[in-house]
Each structure stands twice: as structure tokens, then as C-alpha cells.
Image 1 (cartoon, rainbow, N blue to C red):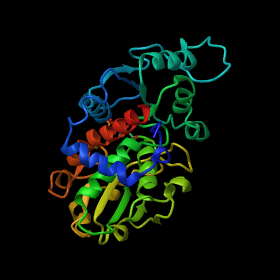
Image 2: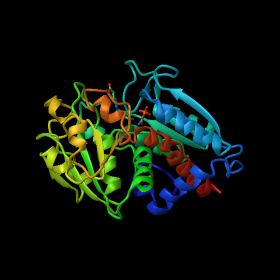
Image 3: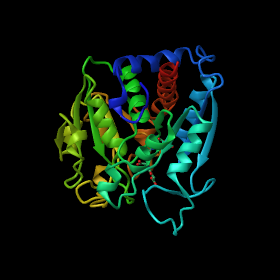
Image 4: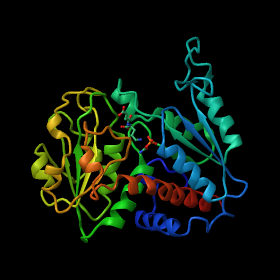
Length: 316
Ligand SMILES: NCCC[C@H](NC(=O)CCC(=O)O)C(=O)O
Ligand SMILES: NC(=O)OP(=O)(O)O
């Protein structure tokens, strides 16, 4: 593995999940591996988990870590080629990525979808430009269309908590008043399509995800039906892909409640966090033993460590 931008960079998913479970048990076994290696974590958007868990994972491997918030700490970065730079962006990604690549042995990038221009977001301009100009491995810390470090942590969590050989996993849309990216939902589907699970996706009409991510999942607009017999309920809000970036409904009946969880087979609730309580999911669900959200967030450390360890081995 030479980059970690999507599941297509992963050569052996099962081995990567088991690497995550291994480093969870032996967090400091590879302290020499990252000695004198530096990772730069570049954020165009806010973060709690990704920032702290990736920093922690890198430190567990003995790496140095540098973190920068673009726009706040650094110059605004221009991504377009051949443009006259007479507006607000003071530096071009051509120089910025090349320079960061000289200071760092690998670079993590977080750059969300802007949700204005679908074609532009799905082209993954920021990630692609960094990959083109940095000259070092790139780690996706949540891009416009994907969040693979989250999806790997989700796979690790399902592997740990499943009680059936082939669990039923349901991705459900949750209500939100703000337009949010499709990245977490896209990525979750993409990774679950590589797992031995029965994948069901449920959302209101107009919230269909891009078919290349949905894969062979069963899609239904009937949330109650989807929940029946489920082992894992994965909640997430996303804005419309077809009516790009729009909030088409905030229907509160899509919120996950204890009554709905009772339709499942003692199903566990998962969410990538941050989550808005009593709008997307009730206190009762989040505070119940059926909620895995804290375990899931804790596994972000091991997901990041498995990825950084594999990339470091690839550089040897
Ligand atoms: N990295 C985890 C999710 C990040 C982002 N959520 C958010 O922006 C939530 C913001 C809010 O609820 O105001 C998303 O959906 O992609
Ligand atoms: N789940 C997740 O990526 O959280 P942050 O946005 O806080 O990093």
C-alpha cells in the first residue's frame, strides 16, 4: 500500500482489519518503525476524532507529527491550474504540496465536499492535487466523497461485536437541518460491499447515493422494514446527491429511537460522530448498552495505526 485514499488502495482488507485488532492489543510494539519519520496532518475542515486519533496512532509508531489548519494557520490555497491568482488565495497547491512533501514523509488531508458543484466534488480535486504535487504517500482524513479511516474503524468494530457469521448491517439516513456531505455514507457502503454482511440502505426518496458506492446493497424507503432483524444500525445524515447538496426533508420520524431499535435483533447503534442528540438519535439510544459510538470512535486510533504502519512498511 503506497497511499490510503480509498478502499482501492488496500491490497488485503482482511489483513488490514486484523492489523487494527493486533495494534489494539500491542499499541507500542512498533515504536522503532516510525523513528525519524514525520507525518503532516493538513485540515481544511474541523475535526476532533480524526485529528487526535491519527496523531496518537503516529506517536504510538514513534513518528513526529505536524498539524496545520489551512486558511486559519496557513495561507489560503488555490487548487485550480493556470488561474490568475488575483483573488483571496495567496498560495498555489503546486508549491504548498511540494514544500510540505519536503518536510514530511507522508501527508494526511481533510477536505470536505463544498456541496455546490457535484462534478467538482466527485473529482476529488484537493486530494488529487496533493497526490500530484506532494511526492509522498497521501492519507485521506475525509475527502469530498470518502472517509476510509472511518470505514476501516467501522469494519474493525463490526468484526469485534458481530454475533453472527453474516450480520445484517443497515445504513439509515437521519434528519438534519444542515446539508452534510455523502462521504461517510458512500465510504461505509463501499467498504461493507467488501465484507461478508447483508447490507441494507434506507433513506427518504431523493436521498439515493451514487450507484458506484451503493454496489449490491438492498435499498428501501421503509426504515422500519429495514430495521427488522438487523444486527447493526449505522446512522448518518447526508444531503441529496441527485438534487446535489440540498436538504429535501428534515422528517423527524427518521430519528433513531428505542422503539425502532426494538425492531432489530438486539441491534447495535453506530455513528461516526459528531452526532446531534435528540435530532438524529435519542439520548435513550446513545446512552443505552446497544450504542457502540464510543467503542467505534476509540477504534479510530487502531484504524489509523494499522494504516500508518502498513504505509511505513511500504516505505522500507
Ligand atoms: N467526520 C465525521 C463527519 C463530518 C461531517 N459532519 C458534520 O459536518 C456535522 C456538522 C453538524 O452537525 O453541524 C460529515 O457529515 O461529513
Ligand atoms: N468521525 C470523525 O471523523 O470525526 P471528526 O470529524 O471529529 O474527525
